Length: 312
Image (cartoon, rainbow, N blue to C red; front, top):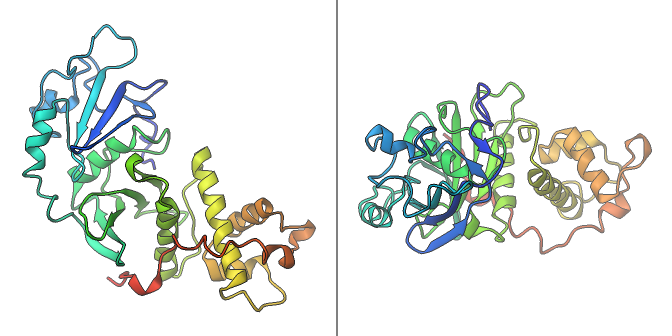
């Protein structure tokens, strides 16, 4: 996601933070480099230059690392798994976690609540520091479309296990979108991947759009991984509609029919049908092929309408 040209600011060609300690029991390597955590001259964590206004108290930003190393500026970044505040000191993180106000009550308003998962909407205008720290964290795992400071025009939809207050992933949505995009960026945090939560969040973004009567889709351009995720999701949803949904008994289908039912943009539907090998010349849809494509067990990650709480 980007705003005022800020989107790619801070991205480096190589990783500069070696690992993240996320809470007390989750440690994993970063995927991308970002200098936005640091003062550009001293390479100390930036909040240390601001008297602790953006993070926790900490030391000198090196936590034992050799400053002469040409790649890593920091061995370990310690990040609160409830509020995303950060430090370079393990003891400071442990002390903060005991008193973090979001440990018992996560921010935002519930928009979906099932026995398994809860999604909460957090407005950038209301929880600015939380959203800024979330965006800083995101920059370590997305290589594009990740702003971090100007969050006032964004909403963040954060997924939790219903029994927990630990965020597992999120997507952001621009509240002022000329193209009526329903998603700016999406990330499932490393410890929670391979649970189909990405598909779950994409589906929820379309539920929001449909509740608003919009035909919508993500902000472009998509990253390579983002495009793969979307093509698989669009294909899954279209196949399901033809197999068990509103299009199951229709003999003649147009792209407009599919768009009306799914809420997908026609250009995205074409991309998915080409991926499925079900689109011929003159946009002819091969229904017999399409109806055989669905794996009936693959829809388990989709949002269940009965648990939606979208009315404001």
